[in-house]
Length: 332
Ligand code: CA
Image (cartoon, rainbow, N blue to C red; front, side, top):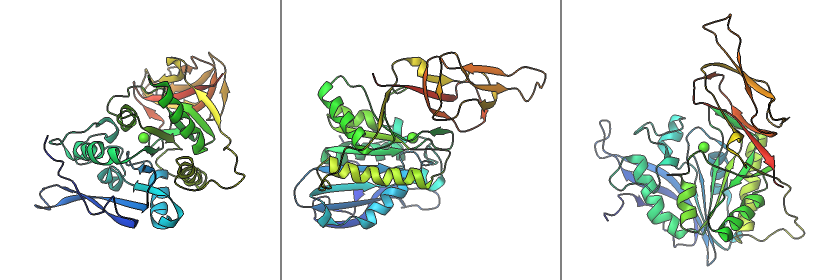
């Protein structure tokens, strides 16, 4: 298998705090021998576990990049035992364009794993992560938010896995993150996700959805920063504060497909239940208006299951197939 073309300007085996780049040759009209430069920081102190912290997997989700840029500047090697690899803007071209997917190739980083050596820019970044960075890592925290089109009640997440012991390690990691909610998340389609790539290597994966709408708030950034510190302690990289108790979090799950609400009409979506609302099965949680047909009654969307509304469409103008809402249940 041909070697991935990315070279790293940081030495993963060297102690200290290094800032550098993953350089991916990218020849194009405005830069014939140019490269895509993906920032990376490595903080290492002796032996110990390796945590990989990523943000900007989607370019319009901001808590991860903000919290990880702050961490990369502030984390002292002496504060840890082991190694922390920080990639604040994993899909760097998407982050700099403020778009979910890469403006270069239109590829969604979180559907590109395990990547492709001879593929497009995003596929080659995924290939480098898969073949070079993931093998160095014991655990991964990938910080997502809802992006420009979705909004979530802040939660950390793990998945149901065939390996029960690994699932429990992922669950414990997600709970230790300390977001207000810990969700046992069922994906619409897990193929190609970084999550799946890490889990298939038998490593701990913790994900998050911390807000959305293409913005960040003091609250959601604080959850990200606190969560990262909690993760460093949980993975044994830093000392736990004496007397610290496990963070308060509400365990939720998605036991049925009806937890997702998907649009079957186009139009203007009016939410009728805000995030954090407990709804009954059959309760109207939103309705779609028809601006092209003012005399037509809006189409009501009803909860297919009782539970807590933790996700909703951030955009109002929707088309069939759009995500409208996510309703989760308290873990029994
Ligand atoms: Ca995302």
